[in-house]
Amino acid sequence: MKSISELQKIREKVLSEVNLRQDRQDGIRIVVGMATCGIAAGARPVMQEFISEISKRNLLNVKVIQTGCIGMCRLEPIVEVYVPGQEKVTYVKMTPDKVARIVSEHIVNGKVVDEYTVGAQS
Amino acid sequence: MKDLSLHILDIIQNSIKAESTLIEVEISEDTKEDLLTITIKDNGRGMDEELLKKVLDPFVTTRTTRKVGLGLSLFKASCEQAEGSLTVDSVLGKATIVYAKLKHSHIDRKPIGDIASTMALAISSNENIDFIYKHKVDGNEFLLDTREIKKELDGVSVALPEVTCWIKDYIEEGIKNINGGNDL
Ligand SMILES: Nc1ncnc2c1ncn2[C@@H]1O[C@H](COP(=O)(O)OP(=O)(O)OP(=O)(O)O)[C@@H](O)[C@H]1O
Ligand SMILES: [Mg+2]
Image (cartoon, rainbow over all chains, first blue to last red; front, side):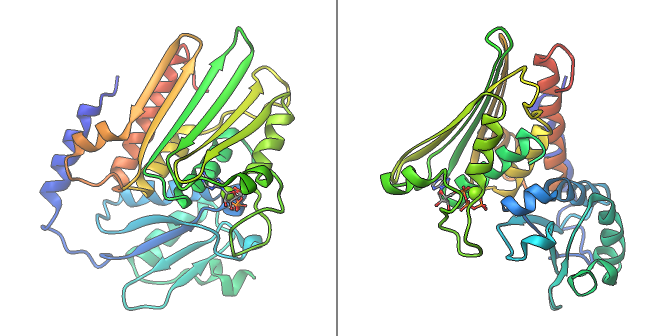
């Protein structure tokens, strides 16, 4: 049986890692469109997959956030990646199986996955 | 929408947009009465009577990125296809309640789906909003209150991916427990 006291362990682990680490990925934001159009097109499992992948790789300072309608409903699910100091990258028609590649190539290694971007898919 | 948990996520987005600070989601499954009800209640900005009257019409929206608002009317259609109904009640400046009722055993009743994911993502994406999630199956009840979770985390953010994953697992297990050991 899980109990909320388990959160103590997560808390201690997080606090012990904080400050000790400065990763190249710090400050990156992954923004998922979660309006009706995005949700209907499958945005939730995409967001869930990003969070699982970020958690697995222990990328402490990458944030996964939601936003409303990005205004290109037919290209949903849409994910925008903001890397500090760089131009925003927009990935469209996202699926959970595209997530691992974006995390390893773009988030971790800094190389945009061109074939999933709005330029290549629209 | 493929399942009810996606509708719920979508309705929660309305509550978030309305600047709520507390959002309560309750799912109640009563197999004796053959009834599934879903209540989503928030303390956001609410709607005036005029908007409330037309809110189930897909051509009504206050959004600016497109001309139709789909969320509530799609949910209503999903309820009606399972011999159910959807009602929206609101007090301007105070609260909004969306109440959905469906026939539990209806062949066209959409499955509840991955409600654990819906709640975990809503919670972690909105650190400043508290959520209460209640799920009843016949006599049994599971309850999650993010105020207790935040107290336990004591300053560590619910937005951390690891916390999100934990919340999701916690809800999944809780639902299994009230559902005779079965997933939904
Ligand atoms: N909880 C709420 N509090 C205040 N206003 C609400 C709430 N829910 C809905 N509304 C109002 O009702 C309108 C219609 O909602 P609905 O979900 O059907 O469409 P939408 O949110 O505008 O667009 P979509 O859901 O397609 O992204 C909203 O634009 C908003 O003005
Ligand atoms: Mg909506």
